Image: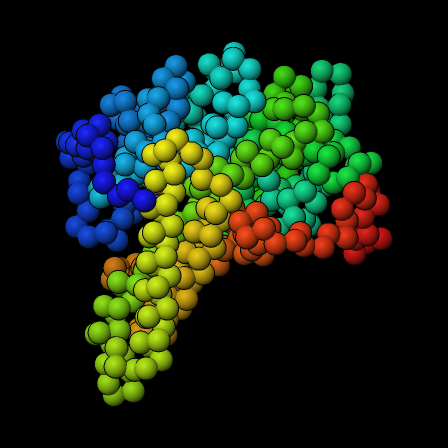
Length: 409
């Protein structure tokens, strides 16, 4: 692994830092994050920031210029991510559209559609969501039941999606549906993009324990989608979905929140049974584990960066980063709340930054362990595709979808 920038990379890093310095405030510390007054205000501020990025030539760096990007190399994209992480800027609204829907449109949409939809997506003038998860299929995406039926030049969609981030403020969505239940579950899927304001689309926000409601249930009742909005061939939706999932796991691969350094500092200042927590053997053992995990993640990222600099594409090993970081965040958040005792669970609008950090980690880590593939799915990917172990037994393999036993038949 080579951790040093080349001459060109050094020049790019300086250019990125200088532009950011002239347009955004530096963070006071690594955990100093942008917090909007409300979701509505946040979306407004995030759109304004996205427009500034686009005007400056820093939006969707890896996209072709004709679609609103910069034609940057993968390693330049990594460098930009490292530099922008030093600044307090809006985020969290466009990752699905720009990070997942955009690449899928780039690969499967026709040229006319790319010119219509990608530039507004790059500028964040239009927001996109991803309509994948369903209540009855759990972590098995290929078990989805939302169906599509051909009707002339249109398709009729009926069914339900759930855990759809940002559906309530999205303009468009990418959706995978079942077009043929008479073949094996992975072979009867078809993929589309649709206008979220289409008649028959109903979005119901889900209130979360954190107080937010950024997830939604989305219902489809006789929703018509023109065939020209199909991405990929009929019955080939699983292949298109894998493109989306690969980008999703890269997007959610890291977990923001308290890490080893924050837990270490907390243990040095908190009392535990009459002594500082850092003196407790059990606490020291936990800290040692988290230090090892944090170091492993750091070098796994360096390995990915080195691969990118050589023009290679990181493979299924990106699942390791996601599964380790999500579990570590949950453990550290639980540890922090426990160590703060009653103060850890107190909540007020003006709670201090440290308490807030552990509370948000506690609320969000469980969801992060599901987002982009559950722990169990990712462990299968790692065992089969990284370690080369035999495939897990799959009782429904090759069986037509409508003949797979369920709890209702």
